[in-house]
Image (tube, rainbow, N blue to C red):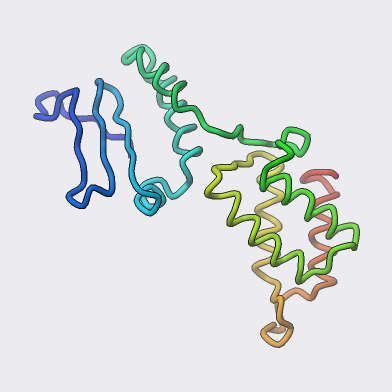
Length: 186
C-alpha cells in the first residue's frame, strides 16, 4: 500500500526494517519510496496481484511523484516489470504461459483439443502465468476473463455437473465465439 509517513516520523532514511521471523525486510533508503523483499509466501501475500503488477503500479506512482521525488523514476526503472502487459496476441512473447494460453485457445476452437484437456491445461497454464508475473490488458484481458468465467461454469467430470453447467459442446461454442467474434481474433 502507498502510505505517506508524517513529517515528524521517527523512521528516516536510510532505515532497514524486518519482520521478527526475518521472512521480509523493508528498506527505506530515500524519501518517497521503500523497497520490500521477502520469502515467496510473504511476497504472495504482500503483493497478491503479482510482483510485476506491483512494479507497474510503482512506475505509475513514480511518474505522479516525479516533481516531488525525482530520484523515484530511477528506482522504478531499476525495478521495472519483467513483462509488458500484453493487449493483443501479436505482442505476446512466444516462450510465455500467455502464449501457451493462446495456443490452447487455437487448438480448442479448431476442435483438435477436447474440452476436459483444454480445461486442465488452461488452469495449469494459469498457475504458471501468475507467479511469472505475466499480465494481459485490454481485449486480451477481456478474452481471458471470459474464458475464466466459462470454465467456472464447466465441470470436467460430467458426474459432477449441475443442470446449469456448460456441456463440452457449449463450452467450445462459447469460447470460439469469444475468441473469434470481437474480443480477440486468431
